[in-house]
Length: 106
Ligand code: FES
Image (cartoon, rainbow, N blue to C red; front, side, top):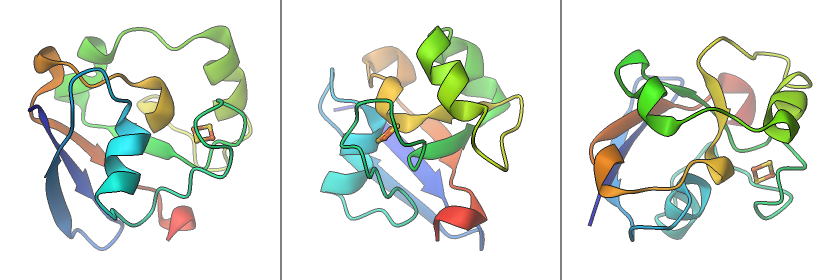
């Protein structure tokens, strides 16, 4: 199964495994990773699954949809490498992906 590493605002790192085809938000929630609130349950409607994708992995995540880009515009701490974890589908190509969770979500 592909692995994903979540780094929190304090620098603590957690590496978890997720099923291929699962989105990164669900992988975090299923593994009790803190900092991913996912209030809307993955409907791309809350931005509480906001993560900063490590630059080495950003292109592999594909382009965000217009809706995701719009939601991210409401995130106070959005950066060029911001994505919504519920919109990133874990595949073998993303095995090893590294993301940081914003301090606002802790
Ligand atoms: S869980 Fe709500 S936007 Fe991702």
